[in-house]
Length: 248
Image (cartoon, helix red, strand yellow):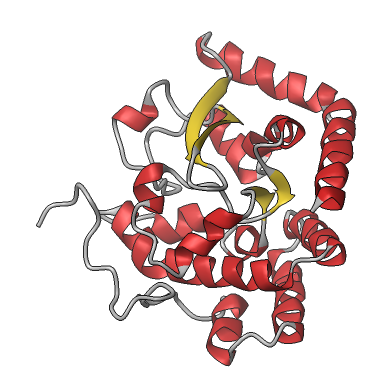
């Protein structure tokens, strides 16, 4: 995958240069809000199940990870006013081009997970740890409204594992089986398109899945016409019934 790495490096370097005024503006807006660091350095599981330090623009109050779960609903009180804007347009993740430049991440790949979430992976899902995590992937498009999906839940982490993770993992595993340079380019274009019309981007994802021979149930879920429902993650015989740290 030397070519993929070379493209990632060149694109990340160009992106950091091109978007530097925007990145500087976001940094200033976050700092002016509470005079605290605009960055959140988040430990994430790397390829090979090691750990790396992922950089994000801080969209929540300082030490938010110590006063709540890893899944974030749109109504989460830890999100700052500037953070809501930053999260809405995925600007918090744009700075991860730095991680791509360093080789911790790729432009396209399964989104990096916290150790707690990765610790729940089935044997089938662990194959997602054989590739570099990415800034975006098919699931980033399909579940761009993850915060709204989790809103109103008494246990966002549990709901995430029951109704989002099963489909995210299936999309990631399918990507791993079919990844190419052209597929990566298509996913990047659809990610940008989703900022203007998620419905149009979802149609693009469906075209990719049908080309890859995805099963009909996954294609139907990706349409996002119906409410999500609990389903077993890949390789599991049962739906996730609880999450570490939840009440019995």
